[in-house]
Length: 341
Image (cartoon, rainbow, N blue to C red; front, top):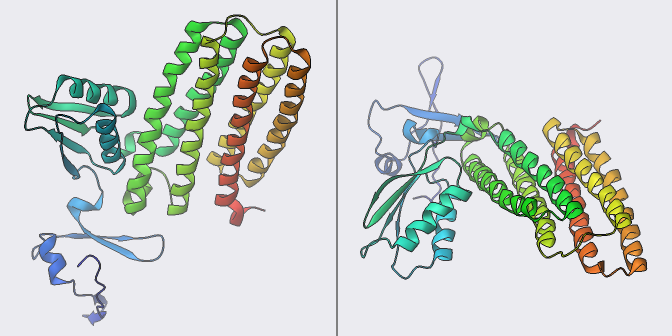
């Protein structure tokens, strides 16, 4: 029935009421009875969504049972759980006829701790584990989660570069651990966006107004996550360094880093304010980054100090960061072009 289109005529009854008969097969499938209430939700495209009250908000009714073979490796187990989380399931029950192994249990617990926001193991036995998302939608709207992601990412860049300057490997390791926190918020926001595209009520609850915004935010979230990855890559470069870079190279890279931070702040400010002109301004900053990148690489080649590889790696990550800021600005332009002056 889901793929069959049915035509129903609008009928007029009484003095001011219009009625449409609902398909009997749908009524039976949804277990709707005479006297039950249905929720009618206007959609952005002008259509109506009709749903039983229990389904209208999408607030916790989705459950999944996942069979766990004894030979399922940790990577495959993680991928399946991430897919279920992103698909909007609020409860996932893992079952294994031969028992969930200790290695699998530790993999699940590590995944929840490092990548799932607001998720806990609510029950556990020798042959099963039940995961439940306990955080409700309004508790952390999409914009708030994205702000927290961007703040963490900005500090990662700052600390990663400080680790380069001081050769502080402990600080570099801290930056790489912070990448897990960004990934947690990324998965959380993507999960909310998937739910929002399918449910207009959810969309309003998380603070967005259209599927186009959901798509734009999906791109932005992934972009910020990649910026965090590049900050972590700078930190990982520090781990392999055995000496500090020379002061003139550090000065050039510091200027580059400052422009990167400015580009991130400007692009996200434009997004949150829905400001077309602010987004246009980001490209001027990114253009400065590109020119500086060429100058930095030329100076690195001239010096031949033995640190060319390290310097080039850091410069490459800084350049990619600027390009990602431009990607965010492009999303803002697309979302606001019809309302720009």
